[in-house]
Amino acid sequence: MDALSEILRALKLTGTDVTDGEHSAAWSVSVKAGAAARFHYLMAGGATLEIEGREALRLQVGDVALLPHGQAHRLSERGKARLVSGAATLERSLADPLLTALPVLVVTNVRGTAIARHVEESLGFTLSASDAPRAGASAGRSRLGELLVIEALRGAIESTRAGETGWLAAANDRHVGTALALLHGRPSEAWKVEKLARQAGLSRSALAEHFTRLLGEPPITYLTKWRLCLAAQALATTAHEVRAIAKDAGYESAGAFSHAFKRAFGKPPTRWRRTQRKARDRKGSDTSYR
Image (cartoon, rainbow, N blue to C red):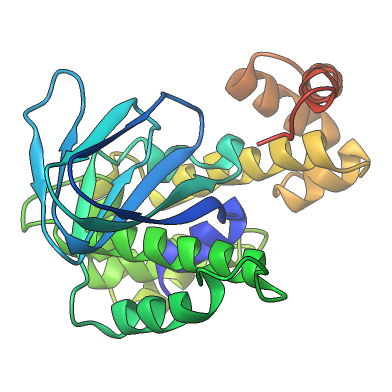
């Protein structure tokens, strides 16, 4: 169990629009800004990545470049290159702990790793030049996209340095990372700091101090916010009664839940649910909800 895996399970990460492009001679690809994260995996050759307002970056073979906030960007090269590119969608209503911690661009090199070998071997079957794609190729491409995004995120976590704070640093910490994994993996459990500390391998006071230093708030405050995010997602995507959602969020009283939810989201649960469903219906009329 790790914090990244647990939060990604809740976020329902999905790889979409995954393509395998082989470029020759001079080439250039521009990607417009969008809500979805974008990624590029350079399998061969070279490429330069440009984001407005930032210095151009020369990608190396094996680099996975992830733009988690979906900024517009451009890739180009004067010679040959092979790029696997795509988008990554997730439940934005739950993504704040991770997304707010991520920079505009994350680059992780996976050359020579097991994930690189798996992707390259799989591409020979799912992204062949045949006019008749193999059955299941689309699902296979989506899975490859998810794996590349996860590897980029894992690299971002593992590259944090001693003394840094924030969600990435917390996830990379042996004890706080364990606590985060527990809170995200079992959010409805009746957690107390003492119980959490025992499972994380620290004393109560040490975990509380360490957790607060890295994340800016105590463990139970963090858990309360995460439970409310899960409640918001349940209100928007299920027909569950508010009382049941309140109980899952750790509130015995629907009234107390309603007050807490309104403080966090600006509207009481029932009104918020109606607003979200109307917004989803409008989006669903011409595009898929993400």
